Image 1 (tube, helix red, strand yellow):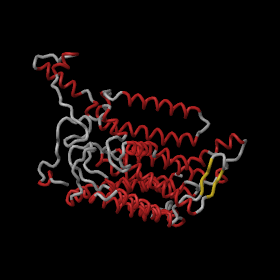
Image 2: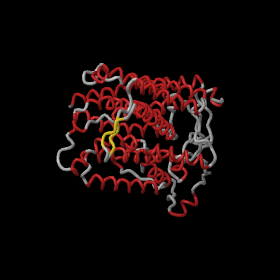
Image 3: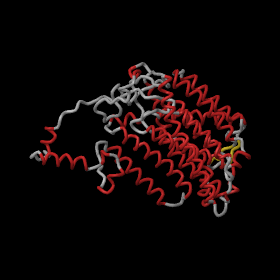
Image 4: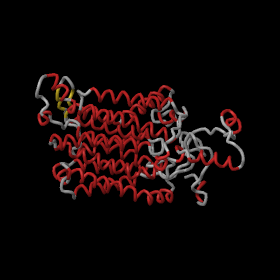
Amino acid sequence: MGQPVRDYLLTLCVTAAVTYLLTGPVRKFAIAVGAMPAIRARDVHREPTPRLGGIAMFGGLCAGLIVADHLFNLNSVFELSSEPRALLSGAALIWLIGVLDDKFEIDALIKLGGQMIAAAVMVIQGLTILWLPIPGVGTVALTQWQGTLLTVALVVITINAVNFVDGLDGLAAGMVCIASAAFFLYTYRLWYGYGIEAAAPATLFAAILMGMCLGFLPHNMHPARIFMGDSGSMLIGLVLAAGAISVTGQVDPDLMNLFAGGERAATHAMLPVFIPLLLPLTIIAIPAADLVLAIVRRTWNGQSPFAADRGHLHHRLLEIGHSHSRSVLIMYFWSALIAFGAVGYSVHSTSLWIVLVIVGLSAVGLILLLMPRFTPRAPRWAEAFVPPRYRRRRQAAAEAGAEVEGQQPPEGPEMASQAPERTPVAVGVSGVNGATAIGPRSRFAHRDGADSSR
């Protein structure tokens, strides 16, 4: 079993490396062609930032598929299935639409139509849901039209859920990376644990998707040097949906020997069969919830469901006092808890400790949400591995400097009264990047076109 793992790691690393190396030239290209729109009222960055990061991610996707096609343990996926070709066709189409939108801002209905066409292209080439395992009913075969409609719906929902959550630096790429890691563990267990070859394409898709996100994240973490844009968010949403579609309805209970024992034991053992139907929903639970709330909110206010606003979950985290980085980490935490919790429960559904761990981590997540102004301090031995704001050295240096001047550092209310007042800055206007930014900082001070409309 070790050899396939090495092949997957090689595919992941090549995908991540190609994406990482391409992002720098793509950033320069985006600036040159003017794919750097002016800051909008709903944005949280404080300077025009280039988009088109999806170009680098698509290059990583192609590189990952090429490498996997030449590996001994993964070559069978391309020989026995047309799903990799279907994924590449749909991804190329949705990526092209995203690139045009990043540059020319095409209409939302046109993008929706393009998403449906991309999903239909994958269906035509065999990437579709064939049947559904329904608890208490069993296996329900789908007609061609039913499978097509369900596949298109899942693709469109997943793409827009990922697109909606792409509002903070590193948020969408990190959440999708966490989701694809959980999905990889599940599909790998189906393939090599139970010998179900139908799960092989989904396992490959998850590994490539992790590489795409990991390669792009170093350029996209706060403060981001480049955004993935719709060309990237729609692309990773489509790849995530393709993996879920590939494995949904492909698990044969007879191959997993699930019906041994009594009826209750068989019911618990059938969870791995039902989980392909549920896991895609748990993976995009937070983006999907944000999508539904956004549609309801905009419709209730008499706006178009596609109208942009600042009511998303990540915007609300900033409003209650969380910094930009902490808001992203909180969203990471909840995504990991839901995705890995679902996978863990499907493996050990009869273990009480799985439920207790999930409940305990949920309590930790609620505490983090309710303590936006709490700043943890790392121990001295770990200061080299954490961001500067979590270190004690700056505080100690300030106190030492005050002692050298013959002044003791003020404490308590005196320190608060003597501290210089900082003018609060509203989030989402020009000159702001996150809720804790104090002053403007421009990377384009020496660039002639910094103040242009792009």
